[in-house]
Image (spheres, rainbow, N blue to C red):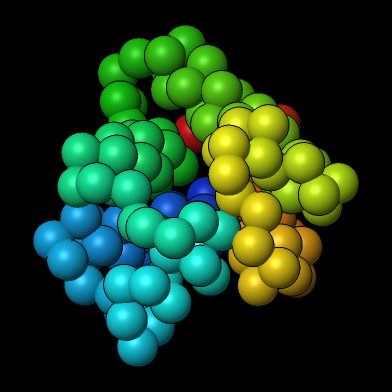
Length: 142
């Protein structure tokens, strides 16, 4: 159980984030009061990206969650490579956010509220998920 726990935590977190992006694609603004507040807080722009963009992020997060959960069990090379790739993307996103450079990967993400939340919440979350995914990979679990 000890080696599987980081993967389980990562999988739950990634699944929750994927579900949130699906909800946003469907028009929800939760946990914010409005779509404008959602856009300012989560994207740093005046508008939320369209449903296709939200669903693309949800699919990537869902795939990372599946990898964290041990899928595909019959193809450890694919699972290990995919997990390493997901960890690398999350680590890069987290590092760019902490450095205040999220706009390099998300142009226009420059509202003061977003920048504050990015450094305090989003980037540390990405880095934590990257560590959890790497821990699974480096522990030999799976």
